[in-house]
Image (cartoon, rainbow, N blue to C red; front, side, top):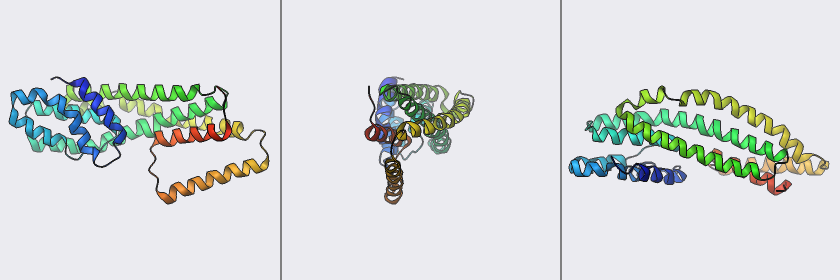
Length: 244
């Protein structure tokens, strides 16, 4: 089976547009195409059907989509019947969505954002922001590599591979870490941001926060954890100022 790195790069590239409905299936199909090249030579009829199946609707956390991609591609090479393959694809949506959201959106992202804001408040300048972007993308890439490799190795046994992997243990550890990081950041940032400011500045800050929350709720802005965290950091730096 060739094209693993091309498939990984394609999957990584479409993750940024994963929230758009048209990319949910098309992105998986786009990433699967390099992995299915060998199947075209072995079984052209099966290859055509596999390409169509790979682009059907699919939805889960993008950072764990490689598990479903690898598992379904492996199943195509093993000539698993189409109905069974479709059931596997459907069954993976919910667990991969839930586990991925717990690992990234309620775990890793709040942890990194909290530590970044705490570092800024403690006088580390912009270096925590750089560390956030570098570390987050490294962890995303490593997770994507593991996901695709595990899915390709496991095939129809991907559920067992997922349950016995490091993922459930990591989620149990990262969620308390997120609470700790955010709990550390809030008082530090509040003290740093408002220290020495007159009462009018404090009142203005609270007013801006309330108005911003109201506008976001009213307009139903769809902000993922990463975008929301980066916006919070950017606004903090913009209105308070920080030196390198």
